[in-house]
Length: 401
Image (cartoon, rainbow, N blue to C red; front, side):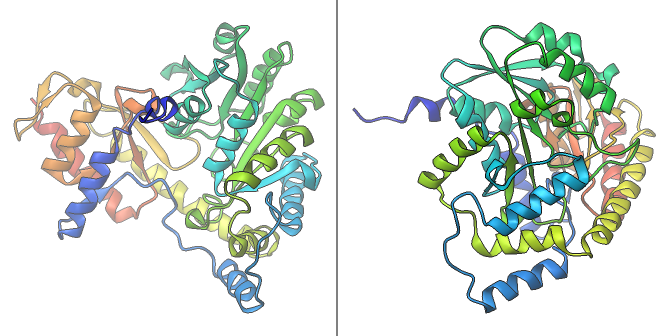
């Protein structure tokens, strides 16, 4: 019998694709679109990493590697965990994949059975529930509160756990909110999870992009028991501006790592060989820390600029981000109103569409992120573009009646 598989039909199309595609076309047509949609750093990959890739090519390092990654890269990742997080993993507990999204898919695929529930705090990165559905699991959303900076509380977590719960996902710092869980907040969540037999998937891809408070704390640090049940997901895409190199990884128990490695060996096999050598150098070279410090400082300056300008705009409100490179903007006071161009605003998607059509500003509506009253604005763009884009947004809002 022909027909599309049910698992594919369960995946929801992205509401953002139409706006993103239209913004790109407008730019290609020469229109001065300012896009706040970026989900990647606007920095070039550091030269020392590029040179490492060139060296690998020159030396003929172009063959297959072990499916779960080279021993050298795994050791570099283990060293990173030991130094940055006081977490100790053996090479057989690390699996390198084709980006952190692939790592997340491997993680869900290795632990989720049909009808298993996975708790996801909302707002969330729109891919999380779709990956759970692809694995025939059931996403269970915990709708966090703005007054808590959109961070899940122990009581909210406790109330979401059932006998069907297989895993809890924590994204810290969070996309799209920019929220950062403190050590005490994570320990409080870990205390709840210490009393139930569930896995934890900790997406730490924005780990290095924190602008306030102390050092980074991973929930896997809480106890040996929590560490054994936690799959830490990370990668080099945000940290070293290597999004196109497609290198992500997990650290977990050897049992889970073996399952992920086995599945990867029959699907994609090893991640890009050249990119693996480049990622190894990213972690081990002395220039890495200075690059990170410079990028983080630039993002922090942009963050403060965006917060300051947005707070001047009537009818909009924000949650101040402490990490990543996004700001969530509440646009619900524009609903049930009409733009200068005659567009009726009923949803955040309507606001985003009208902003693009009338002011040539691209933004991401957050219906698909579990936050239907919000837009997500990225500050992974220049200061000048931030100023121009926010001026257009202020004009747009002032004209809405």
